[in-house]
Image 1 (cartoon, rainbow, N blue to C red):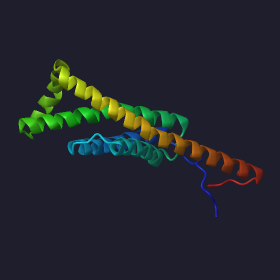
Image 2: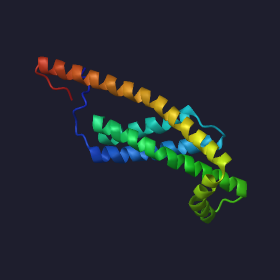
Image 3: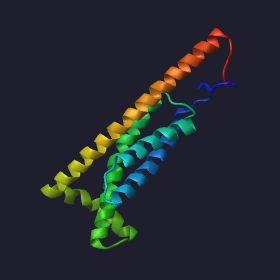
Image 4: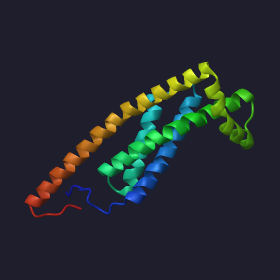
Length: 167
């Protein structure tokens, strides 16, 4: 039985597209969990895992560059998810569900948040907890990446020693 070595057709561009797609799905999950009244580690973990999985699925393997790109995408999408969750929450408070109201609230909510010290403090707290959860979830990805790299290095060494190529 052959073990699979990740030296197949690698595509950074496709990996980035996969990471963005995964991050968007993860952001939707994060928003849904927030609508239930939670800022959860599960939502952050889902966002991060889906980002990395999307990269691996379309890019075919993870590299150091891909790893950094996935972290950057995850870090960048989280404030968008938080802000959209706030807009949806504001729509509930106002009692509307029209797309035009969503656009208006999306454009005007940030100045309102920044003008009220109590709301601003709550938003900062949400951001701190969200990024702490994202950081904790990234520990798993670091460990997984290291294990995969060690495994691939061992397989490459064995293949070299035996003059074999694993596919």
